[in-house]
Structures are given as structure tokens and as C-alpha cells.
Length: 504
Image 1 (cartoon, rainbow, N blue to C red):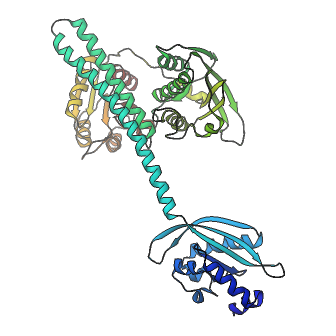
Image 2 (image 1 turned 90 degrees about the horizontal axis):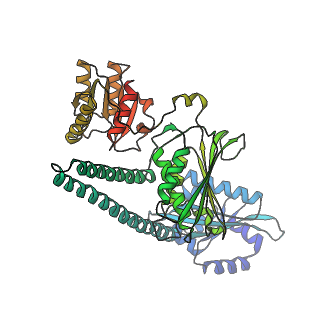
Image 3 (image 1 turned 45 degrees about the vertical axis):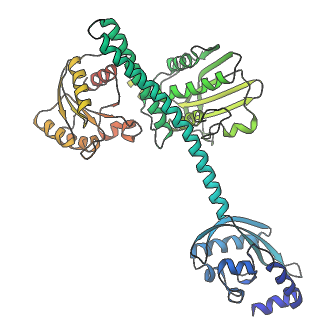
């Protein structure tokens, strides 16, 4: 019946010629009538699908594909093409007779009969499986190479930091009983090296899956100045500030936002090899119902401008892409900035003119007025205290060190190795505060322990502690019942202030 229909449309001789012609084409070709029934195909289509032409003709996709979802997809695209004749191109997958799944691009067009009426659809299948595999491998190799560069830089930084710590400890042992002033200086230097190592791991976590900010409400004015000054120290680049005096507070991870400012200022410095000025401007801005990517609300707009060489227009859309760089470094700086700002529910963009300079613009949401009453300020003084503290940590060395620090501050300390021990101790005698390690390998960690402690004492003053700052509990600790948070490793200033705030 279908064969007769084809012959009536085009004639036997013409059909034979066309069939011979398309059989010479190496790509699979098919054609259907307006109802979706196959009128024919070429030899490559037979081989690709493992079906003879005679068995294909007169059947539809539901009978051939034996996959309802695929049949529905083909029917939907074909119906649209017949309704609005032209061409269609789409990517899908096809199950090969050998059982493998092949990635293909199908290109289709409507064809007409001798009278000019739409009579059906002709299509070509292009197998792109190998091409996609090669592209995936190319991307994988590229990322591995970039990660290799990054890992080399990290290893170099860590080795330098460890060398500082080891050297200072060695010298401290030498001068320990001789020069107490020298000893104090060496130990402070070792402490600063550890803080640098801590910040390096935070940078890595920021770009890894998660990197959740550990936020606090704070003003941003001093952060902008200190991050800029630190980055430009020892260079011939000047900085100028235009900061609105009435900037409200923002809820941010101080270290992460400092990293963003530092990375952008560093880019500005590198764009001005012969010197120049970096201009930092901060102002209030309110967005209404824009309908764009900005949610309605109050933001702080931070603009960082240089007088450098500028960025070519074709690169502007790529500057925040991972591994994109025009320099010799690994190219993660701006992609980390983008990741951080996204996790702060903010926005970051860039404008540039070749030969004139570049401006990066950051928008950070302002905390609501009612939240600002809890404005926190960073304290660098040691806050002594008193009371009973329970420390839960599976590492004996950490328990000993934290215990010594807390006793020095004036607290009485008990220890637990896991959640079960902490619960038993708290049940027998309540504590003024509890410091819970979030993760205990092979035992009950802080997340589970706090639930039991809240059952015992709904007013328990628990502080969650972890070296893995991108756990969601660390950024939203109050949701889980904790009253405070502290990221390992921490200084005596940090733990003393957290305890004072929680207990008071």
C-alpha cells in the first residue's frame, strides 16, 4: 500500500534513481509520510538500526523505537515541522543493534509532492558519539592539567607555611630558656603561619562543592580598605576610596569577601604594570521589581576600577569561567570570586574598555533593619571568663590544647571523645557551655549529639566546631540548635570571644 503511494507520487523510475542515490550516502537517511509512517530509508539506515527497508516501510516510530518517550519526542518534533515547514535539528540518543547507546544529531526537513503540497519528512542521522567522547576527554585532560598547576601551587604554599612553622618551633626550643621576648616573637610568627594555612584551605573549600560561607553581620568599610592595602603592599599601585558614610551592615563571610576584594585588586594591579591607581567605591542602591536577575531590595554596590590595559570584548563573557585565564597562573581567581558572591546571594559583573581600564562591580544584599540590632564586631582582645566547659573531640591532642587554653582563660574543663560520652557527662552535671566537634569518625558527632542535649536541656549553650567549614551546619548553626560556631584551627582570641558571647 505504502509502496504504491510512493510510486503514484513520483513514478517507479524516479524512485529507483533516488534510492540508488541515497544508498551511496554514508549517513543514515529516512523519509516518512505526513502521518509518521516510514516511506523508505537508505542502506546506511538499515545497517545503523539493524532493520531491513521492507520491514521498516509502513511502520511508525512507536513500532520501530520501542520506546514510548522517544516515539513521543519524534512525533512532537515531526508534527511541529509539518505544521511550520522548514528544517529542524536536535540531539538525542539511539540504541544501536550491538546494545550500545549512541549520541546522534538528527536533521529533518519537510518535502512536498509534485503539486507542491507538504507530503512528508526527510531526515539525516549524524552519529556524534566519538566526537562527544573526544570532547569530554579533552575537557577532562584540560581540567587535570589546570588542577595539576593548582596542586603544584598549593603544595608550594603549604611547604612554605610548614617551613615557617617548623623553623619557628625549632628556634623556640633553642631560645625557650634564654630569651623570653625572642620566644614570644617566634611563637607569634608560627601562629601567623598556621593562620595562613587555614586561609589556604578555606580558599580551596570555597571553589569545591559547597564552600558555604560562615557569615556574620558586620560593616564592610574597613574590610574594603584592609583587603586592598594588604594586596597592594610593596607595589607601586595607589588606592583611592569613595565610601558612602551611611553604608548599612551586610551579612558576610569576612574571609571570603576579603578574598574576593583581594583577587580583584590583584587583577587590577597586574593590569597596570607601569603603575597607576585602583579606585574603590561603595554606595547604597535599591532595586525595585526589575524583573531581571536582581531580587527586589537594598544592596551595597562595590565598584573596583583600574587604569589598566583593559579586557578584549570577546573575553568579557568568559572571565568568570573556571580555568579561563590570559595569564600563566591557573585561572581560578575570578571564578572563585564568582562562586563566593553567588553563595552570598549577590551579583558580580565586569565592564572594560581596551586602553582605558576595567571595572568590576559587586552587589551584596543588605541585612534587614531588624537584624542589625545584633551587629557583631570582630574583637582581637582575649576575653577571660569563668564557668564549666565540656569539650567533645575525638583527637586527644586537640582536647589537650583546647583544655590548656580554656584553663588559661579561667574556665573549668571536662572532656568527651564522642557524642555518647558528652551526653552522659551533661546528664550528670550541666555545663555553662559545650563545644562539639561536628564529625567524629566511627562515633556520634555534633549534629546528632545536639539533638540529645536539647532533649536534656532545651537551653543548652552548644558551640559547633569543625575544620570543614563548607558543611551547611557551620553556616546555619542556629537552625540545628547551636548557639555559636568556630572553625578549626582557631586562635585564643576567637575561642575566648565565642565563649563570652555564648555564655553571656
